[in-house]
Image (cartoon, rainbow, N blue to C red; front, side, top):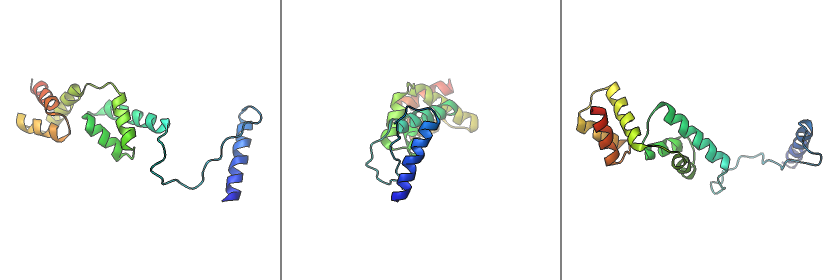
Length: 138
C-alpha cells in the first residue's frame, strides 16, 4: 500500500508538470482503496451530478417531486443529494402532473378517478393530481 501511495504522488506530480501546472504544485494523494464510509461529507460534485441527472429525467418524462427524489436515490444518489438536486430546480409540479396524466392517457385508458389515484400513487399531492386530471381531461 505504501509503494502504491508513493507512486500516485509521483504520478500526480509528473502529470501536473506535463500539463503545465506551476512548478512545485503536487496533487494530494488519492486513496486507492474504495471508501465505504457513508458518513463522508457530500461533495459539490455529487450534488452537481444529481442536479444534471434530475434535469435529464425531466427533459424526457414527468415526475412528482418525491418521485424524482426516489428515482435519484434508485440511481444511488444519497437522499440529501437527491433532495438538494430536486429542490434546486424550478419545477412547476402542477405542470408535471398534467404531463404525467397525459402520458398515461396516451398509453392506456383511465377513468378520472383511476387517473387521480394513479397520480397520487406516483407521489403527486392530492391537489397536484386533481389539477393534472382536470387539465388532461379538458
